[in-house]
Image (tube, rainbow, N blue to C red):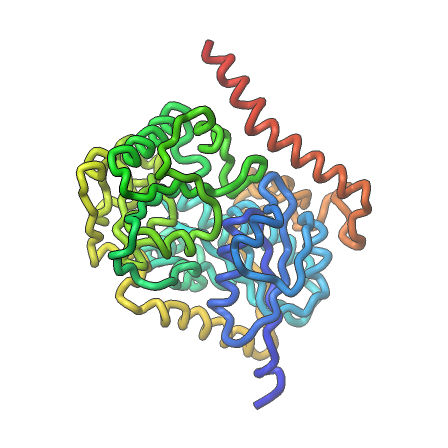
Length: 435
C-alpha cells in the first residue's frame, strides 16, 4: 500500500459562524475516508465565533486562523489540501467557488470541495442550492433533502451528480431510557425564531408557568450564546435579557454548554423548530415542537408536519408526551433505528474515488456564471471583495501577511460596534417607529 494512502488527509474547513464551524468540522471527520489533519479558517464577519463558542463545539483544529475572503484564497492557492469543506451561507459558498476556481486555474491538482447545510432546510431552498452548485459534493442531511436537491438542480438543467445523502454530523449519544430524578424538561432557544418581543416573552412566560405547575421537575432554558456573542442568525432579543427582573422559580435555570451534554439529562425537549429537536429524536427523547404561535413557514415548525411531535404548552402542562412517527424519522435522516453508523459511507466512498482520479479533478464549474446570471452573480462576489472573474478586487485585505496589532484592534472594535448596533440600537429605533 503506498504511503500516500495511509498518511492522514489534509482537510481544511472554512466557516462563518459557530454553528457552521460545528457542522463543518464534524462533517470533515465523518466523511474522511481515513485519519485527517484538520486546519480551520474562520471567515471574518459579524458572526465570527468567540473562543468560548469554539470550545463548546468540542472539536479541536490542528491550525486555526481568522481570515477575509481574499486572505483565504491566497492561503489556499498553494496549500496541498486533500479536502476542503465550505461551511458557509450560500452566497459565501458561491464566492469561494469562483474565487478558488480562479486561484487554482494553473494548478495540476486541487482539493475535493464539499459543502451542504447545517440543519433543516425550510426556506430559500432553490436560492441556497444554486449558490452551492459547483462543489464536488453537496451534502443532503436526509433522504427527503437529497430528493429535493436533485429535483432543483435537474429542474434548471444543472448537473445533480454532486448531491450526496448523509445525515446530520452531530447526532449521537446514548438513547434515552428515563427513570432518572429529577425529571428534566429542556426548552431549546433559537436566536431569531420567533423574532418579536411579544412572542419571545410569551414563550418565556409559558416556560416559567410550566416550572411552577411542576415543582418536582427541573426546567432548563438552553441558550445558544452569551450576551455580546453572535450565532448563525442574529439575536436581537436574548432570553437572558427578557428574563431580567422576572421572578424565576427555583426549579428553572438558564444554561449554556454543549447540546449533547444537556440532552444526556433531558426527558422532554421543547422547541419551536431548533435542529436540537432532531438531535433529541435521534436519541429517542420525547420531543415537542410548539404550535402555540401557529404552524408557519416563518417559524420553521412546518417542517415537522407529519412528525407526531407538534404540541402546545397547554398539552405539555397537562402531561402529554409526543410520540414521533417512525416513517417521518426515517425520511429525515434521524437514524433512530441504528443506521447512523453507515450514513456517511457513500460520501466517504465518493471522496476516496475523487482523490484517486487520474490526472486530478476538473476545474470548478458553478451553475451561476457571468453569462447565466450577469445581474446577480457580480453582486454576490462583490460582497466578498471579488470581481466577476473571482479575482480579489483592488483594496481587498492583503492575503500575504498576518494582520498587525492595529488591524486586529480595529477589527475587534468594528465587530463590537456591529453587535451593539444589532442588539441595542436597532431594536430602539424600531420601538421609536412604533410610537
